[in-house]
Length: 277
Image 1 (tube, rainbow, N blue to C red):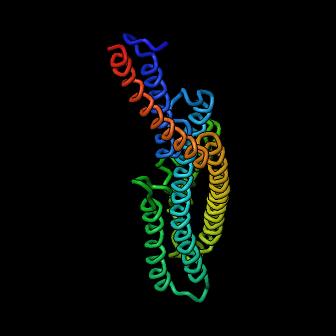
Image 2: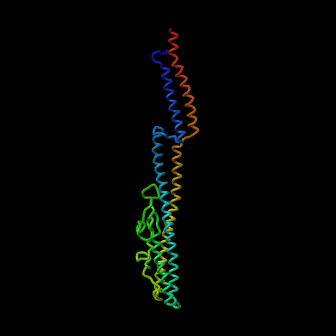
Image 3: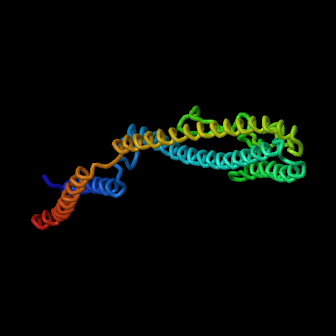
């Protein structure tokens, strides 16, 4: 029997109105965000997994940046080493000319002048080959010796080391700073030393190439991992648009029905009072 003091029907209508209104709001939020998990209450386990995957994706994206920077460093270093290799070839040619018995001492003096200038140019290139303010080929940066570890993954163990050789002319580098070709004997000795220097630069370039190749493979791996994780994350959290639109439509219809029911229920006490009056 309907009660006048307590409008049970109206209260029920309000309760259903609130339920359907919340469903409508939730569906709108999911559709606008593109995610089926807009709060922990939607799927606590799914949210936890998605959060971890999102963190791994962010880390991998930074690893991709690290890899690109490492590749740029190595390409810069190889460019400098290539220039040094060209200079050494020219120096060897000059030494060969000076070592010839047909070359006069006065000619050797001119040859030695260019030879000395080229020696200085090697040091200039070694110290001037820089990346972000660090000289790459003169043995003074962190890249010398044991090198620098670069993060290339989401785990602390996912690292690749960049290590670059000292290509200066001093004894710790190419050991050619003391050479001169002013005499035939000096030029002959220089040829042997220059061969060793050329071999060292070739070896350094081979190491650079091997490191660059490894970073290239790592870059491909990072890209694949990122795509796989993004797909997995999408499967967990992306909203099913068709399903959510159906939920929204249903909630809208039910909300309108609840509004109508509430209006009708609110009129019932007045109707009963009118009958009793």
